[in-house]
Length: 304
Image 1 (tube, rainbow, N blue to C red):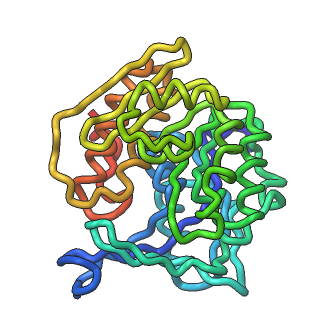
Image 2 (image 1 turned 60 degrees about the vertical axis):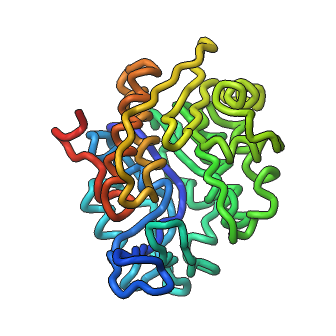
């Protein structure tokens, strides 16, 4: 390999069964796809023409086969994603209304460790991406997430992505703050940033959150505000906002990851923060308009 990767990410991806005809408790029809915060972002970046690689573990099962094939088809390099003969690939079952159940305890990805990064050319990558989900999967995945950030010399991006029901969910602040301290770019929702800052006042929003997050180590902070759009504090300390016209949400899961992909793609291409916010919002809205974590992400020629 002679050409450095644009983006390398570490994290878990699961088979995703999405109810399409109502709430999970009564649904009879499901859309079968895959979902994982880091690979959702990598899929978007790959479709936008970036060279990407994913570091993880998959079971040697048909679920792992399906995910491996789908991500390889997107052009993501999987040479550092070994198959595990003793552990299964995780599964999530959800609807489009916020109900989700996981079957991921003891999954292949739950034993990712810093050793999985040994041969990965992290230092030459233009950017790396990890989320708080990886940091909450287990002690070893948490160390792998930190190792990724500590070895990186390019842009280091972290999305807190705090989730309940994981090994470290009840210690979210303790486990995710070290990731924040070792990154350059944070992309988080307002409720997640408030939690990390131990802030109970829901009126603390946008720019105020971003400026307080900046004190924790990153150089650039993006605050995702749902229907109110997003804002970002750039590296010169200027606050920028973008509020796109509202569009119907068919399935909002994955929209934040798509936003991350659009924003990162723009920044890696030399765009300034206002333009990156616009591209991030466009990509997020496209994914929210289709069933599945990545199905709606614009393909080449569709991003404008």
